[in-house]
Length: 297
Image (cartoon, rainbow, N blue to C red; front, side, top):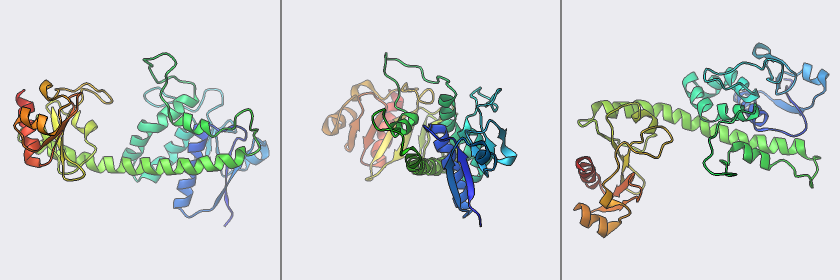
């Protein structure tokens, strides 16, 4: 069987073409199809590619053409973020890779939309300190580009190395998104069956934050953790916020072991974070007692 030709531009690479390539590689590997990656701007080679992304000036997903540089771009999401090559490839093959559109949408929201935004020159970060920006995935891929002192002779080989790295990241994000999807059902069930809706008790360390935030009642969640210990955690007011709906008691802040045990009367209390969003006990009985005290505070 002839190798599928994956065509993208040569020269310096960017995060969106790296991850668009990684997506196509994973898709073809899943089908046990062989492929080769060609980086060029030669119009004849581009025209005859089986998959063409981030080059060519055409968006035609039916024929596997995924460029966004043409006049008018290649469309945008409902939230207004325009598609770059990664998002265009993902729109066609993400659900196939993830097993469902819902899981593919998780991945798009978490990482792909931000990569597309950066490639299209859209600022999505609000900074709080001058000259201090988040160190993001595009900083990582950019770190592999040669400096002015190194020259660009090895760019094609470096691109392939970074694509292999991107494949691993993408595989992990798909795995995590699938697990999150499965956990959502279990967390919802725990919330709906809770005797006191202010306190949700889970039987495993599921990803719970976004699910519990959909319910107005929960204030705390109890979770088993590695080593047989149990956590009591606060519910945040919003996704990615550090502000809790209700803090743990102020007089617990920063206390450990005997000090926390003395203040709470819980003999196996271990620790309370000084920011009052986390407390730990050695048993389920102990953590439920801490939860009871926190609810009454």
